[in-house]
Image (cartoon, rainbow, N blue to C red; front, side, top):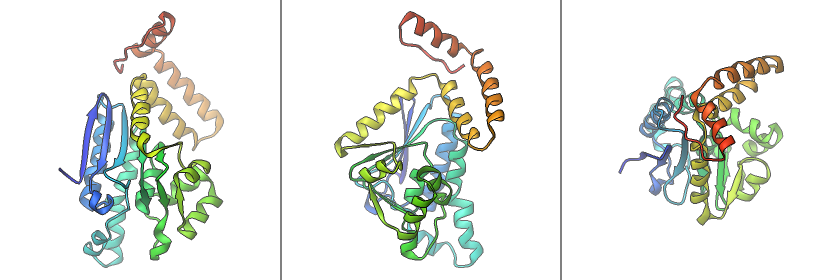
Length: 260
């Protein structure tokens, strides 16, 4: 058993944080494996959806503070922990064109919450507890939370969560738009994987292009977005999968996609 494990089941890749005795606090070695797993998922045509979750009763309690203590004390060394190691994960996430779902039960704290925020979708158990805990230990968010959280819940709410370090449970997280769906704890895994399998059964090229174009459209003007969509549409319509989807729709049968 390793601290980070990956399994591919029918096109759904699970990235499992596997340090339950430490509430899945991650080490720098785990970060390297984590980022590589995401890069590999992008390049592996057999992977259509990625699910990120923690083993045991926690999602992730952030970075193992012993990792910081052992990595040097100079400002440059401490910056390198984030810039050259931890931040490889959000960079790999940004490159990943396949849906990435965070399956959150128990605490998601500090950088652990940030890791959930960078996913495309977040499904939570009612036991989930989100906390941007940096202020509690005199730090600032360093794993992408400052970028992702205000884009998800809005600037005022994000600032409140950053400045107070308050915990948000699964129900409140759903109310403020922090998570897409909330489930009873004993239903979370089944519901998450049922959803993931549904996405994995869809046309992979269209799925990837929709995700890529959506994120691109948040950073460009309307005319550019429309022009981009028309170009994407022309390419998609030339694929075998597009023809198969239309034929299956007309024939009222399940489509069989091959990824080209």
